[in-house]
Length: 96
Image (cartoon, rainbow, N blue to C red; front, side, top):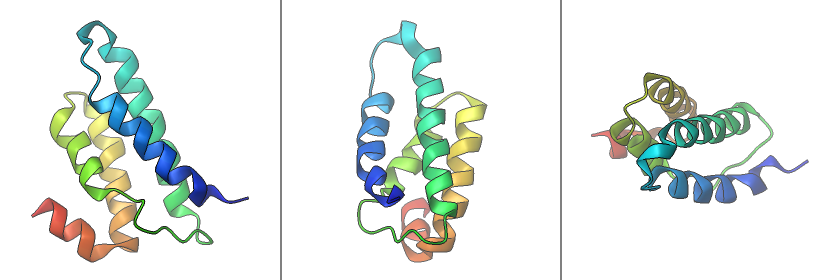
């Protein structure tokens, strides 16, 4: 199993979901973002995975800034917490 191969495609999907412009699809978009964030959380918590430059901390911060859904905020903050253990300098740089 190589879950780190999923990181780049998951961030691509997250980018598309965050920038979807159809207001009528907000619920589905929020749910999709939450699922993507959950997958990324699971990957980050796997001790055997080595994540590289594909991990986009700025996009996770955008999830917190752009979403109005508290559940999405929670998922993004949990992922930022997991990312802070892996990339403390990158996370600190993006949130300041």
